[in-house]
Image 1 (cartoon, rainbow, N blue to C red):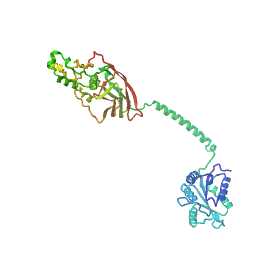
Image 2 (cartoon, helix red, strand yellow):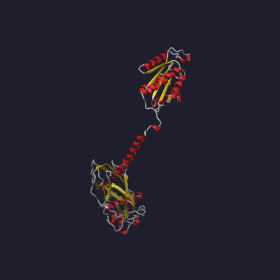
Image 3 (cartoon, rainbow, N blue to C red):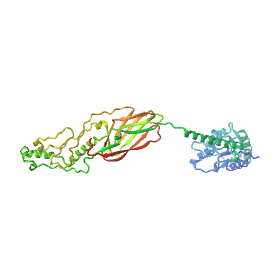
Image 4 (spheres, rainbow, N blue to C red):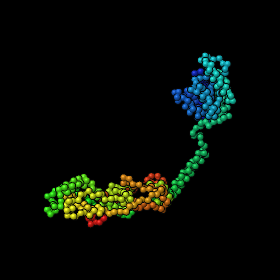
Amino acid sequence: MINEKKYQIFVSSTYKDLWQAREKVIETILNLYHFPLGMEMFSADDDEQWAIIQEMLSCTDYYVVIIGHKYGSVTAEGVSYTEKEYDYAVEKGIPVMAFIRNREVALKPSEKESSSKLNRKLDAFIAKATAGKMCNFWDEMDDLATKIAVALPKMFVRKPQIGWIRGSEGVSKELSQELAELSNENRKLREKVRNLESQVVTEKPQLAVTLSPDSATKLVFKDHLKDKDLKALKPMVMDEVADHLQKYVSESDIEEYNSALPSKEQLTDWANKLNFMMAAECASIPNIEIENIGNVKARDINVTLTMPDIVTVMYKDKYDELETPKNIMPVSPVEKAEKQFASRRTVGVRLGHSFYDGPDLSGLRVKTRDFYQSNVSINHSLLLRDNVIKIQLKSLMHTCNKIFEDKLAFIPVAVGKGEIEISIICEEFREPTMFKVPIEVIEKEESDTP
């Protein structure tokens, strides 16, 4: 009866002197209904040859080496490929059978090793192969085939290997049924796990960011320079001074006054600064609240608020230090003559003189404020750059909150609608939470007071 299990058997030898012997051995293995494997069954260049041999040996059940009277080509390590294959098979624990040709057999010159050095290597290899391993000696090819046919079945019994079987015979009917039952049970368990997972509330922090009061997102603004063209100041001449005041005004007074008049560019810059100071009177001082409404502690929290360009954000302490730009308007000699000097308490500047031919800025007033110093904490920080607010918290317990108040000033600079883009990320989040908060700047009515 043919054995249902088939073995893969690697045949190793020198080639030029033993190619006929190799063919006889391969034929014998096939007649035993097993799989022979040898280097002639694949092609490779020198760089790939050893890698392929290793791969073939790794899946081999038995290793047969045929040793003649030639050592063979030598590798870079100074050993022949045949000996290198033999050593690798022994290292991997593959059962080894050595068939050595008798040394007294008459040989052709082409079957002998001509180099004394290689002969010494061959003798050493034969000594290694005969030391404690299954070893046979042969004379001619028929003798070799007979000894192979006898030795292999004995080795199959003494050292059975994994071998190969037909796929249809690999699993018994009972085992196949058991595997089917296990697969079905596994499927039911996976479904049960998925159902349980869907019912479990994942514990994680849930962070919310709010701004208060309402004025933080709904501000008022009056653009005093809207649709106005600032013109250069008109120089004064003596003929425009009233007759009853000319004796109090000299030509040098007029020349000094005219030389001190600001240019149109200087006047525009000064008016813009005054306009911003007036807008600052409408600023909102927001409270930014970060709350953990989840069920676990949040760590390494980063909140980013990107403001629209209708609002300018300043640190509160810097906002409190804002100062009215210095008045660049010279005092008119006529006012001196009439002893009607302008009141210069803060920003109030009277520009009613007929020589100024631009918009009236006399209504601009800015109140003085107390200096404010921000608190500093190692557990949190608030940074402002390019109208982007960045807040960092080391941690925030669930059901707790952190309020940043009196830290910033929102100054309206243009009428319109926009959105504050808010991003929240913490150690427990896989990706940022992002949302937008609408913000609006409406036009201030003339009747409104700062």
